[in-house]
Amino acid sequence: MRQLFNAQVIYMKTAHLHDLWDSPDNARLTTKQFSFRLPVHIGAKIAALCEMYPQKNRTQIVADLLAAALDDLEKHLPEELGSRPDPEEEHYDRMAADASHEEYVPYYRLGGPRGRFRNIANRYYEELEKELGNEKPTPLYQQLWVTEAQMKAKKS
Image (cartoon, rainbow, N blue to C red):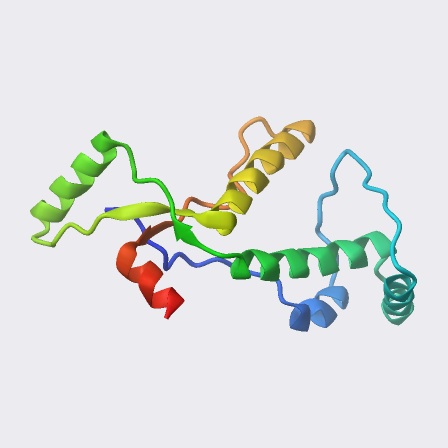
């Protein structure tokens, strides 16, 4: 049977950034440089953090802030039921449920904006990892499966 929605996912939280910035860095950087201009008030806040944590450079601080914000955003994107597994997969899952004397509960891929974001991020992650020489990267996000009951419970 498939691992359903209660998969353990580790998220970076802004509350943990202080501890992260007080520890050594193990981050890998992309081969491409991203360049963008920031609003003045954001630039001032980043400069303040750089002064407070001189052992971290601006790239590390901005990357950690973005990671925390993106993790939080991903968790809060709207969710919907996505597509069902292919018939052969579903057949084997039904057989497994029967063999373990459990009722088969139909499940769906996580859909909606959250599922779409995760799929697109996986595609770009694979591309960026290959640029770094990793020809078979593990997906950034694992496929999440959800039942109708789980989806209804989350919405209530």
